[in-house]
Length: 276
Image 1 (tube, rainbow, N blue to C red):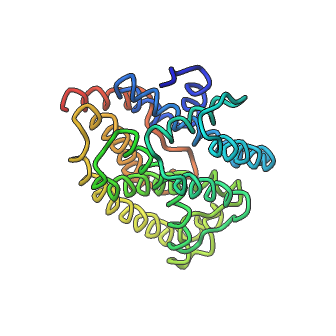
Image 2: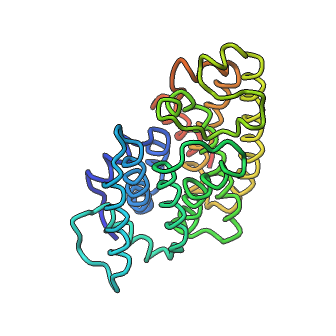
């Protein structure tokens, strides 16, 4: 098993405050693997979310990953992010099609701007988030009965990200929420401020959908060993906190990016660690 290094630490830390700080409550050996997983995930995401988008960088990254995966055994590469992910994938028996689905969703951010039906949103979410939940089940050596709940946890968290990041996604020219379900023409701020009631109703409906998925995900906590339950629950709790802030004032998504601060995450992690 590889030891953690500054590359994975920095990529993960800069990419996700909630996941990063919650993951620090895992035992050291598991934390190392989590950093290897999220280093790969965040690196791919960074290519498509950069301004301007680094299309060449993304496709070169995919090419290097496929080359490393095709090798019969782990071989040194110039990219420790890929090298360690491939080693992890082999050791924990990740299904290659999960990584393919993840990379397809990342590619969508280069080629598709608008996901305006729930079916389109869920197609993207499967690759961008649900398979990450599946990666985590294998990383934590969980019973396959946890797979459905793990997918729902990834789905629920990604959906909160969509709601929280409406203003940011507008700047990218992207739509991830199913606006076709409403009378809104778009989620542009100027448009929704002319229709405040419709916007509030739409956001509350999306938050209710998130809560259904989150409740389904929490049914899977029973499959987590006690030493793993705290970090996973902490991440879930922080997304629930984010949802509550937005529910109280849906227009907050245009004013700031709603995220728990590090102190809130750490305190939640400590309380969950004591409880479990």
